[in-house]
Length: 396
Image: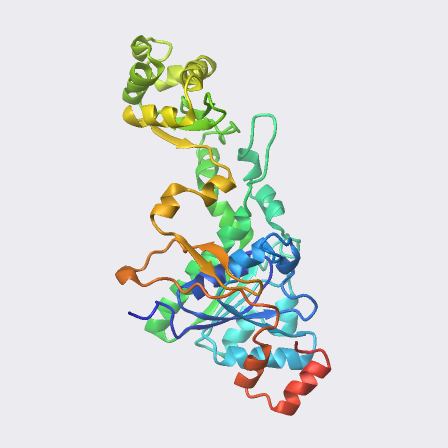
């Protein structure tokens, strides 16, 4: 089999929570060696978020497979020296410490790239290195609020945050793509260089559609729950067996098919109150009543079958357990098991499918400090030096 795309690339990450760990996990899946530097006192604080994964934290399991963990006290010069030794042989460095912390430790991207011109070094922050918000605490939900995501999510009465850490994930994916781009550039110029990604910048990019509506003379979309602000019918409707099915009618031809084949009232296809999307939006309540009555008379399986037979886009409204048992994921063989300190855990293959059948490297979830001894040896620490680091609580 061919090597994975990032085989031979070494990443050192002083990381915590989600944004940076999610990015470096993508790199590990593609073959990079990722060394995760954690705090002595408990490690990455995401380890303590919950105990849902057989005693491990679900966030940590999700974002940290395939990494080597070294536990160091970076307040001690000897701990920082170990990181610098690791970085000297690395291709990529990623950090998402609190604002100013990396610079105080000499581990910011600019400092490290000045010392190692081929290094790709990434600073991940909440709001960026400059500006009035640079020092502001930035947790995912706070950034969702600042980026306006909450303003367009929810019902007319109640804005809500996204149910996943959208700001963290957005930042993580731009770190991932930014690192790949910088490595490509290094391949042609020989130079690495600093990369900066902020959660606000990343999520603001994802807000492009409502942002451009507001910027260019329109108004931001109203919160409409599961309904679409400017298309009808486009919503989730209850079925007779307690399920819910979402459907989307994209044009008037589809409405005529829906009226005839699902609602059972073909005359609605030409009725001026419903014949055009503009009319259906203006009469949204009546339109929804007609669709709800038709789907409410059958079970979810029958509703989906009728909609698909009519060529109407539809989906079941699944919960997370439904996703875990999704027949499409099962049919495509998307599930694997990864090792962990508590035994094998179920995990999804990453979304990038590689050519030639090469499969992502889904390594084990590390215990805190599991690889400290091996890594200290690898950077040339003597037996006496390693013993002193452990004795003094600098390494664990």
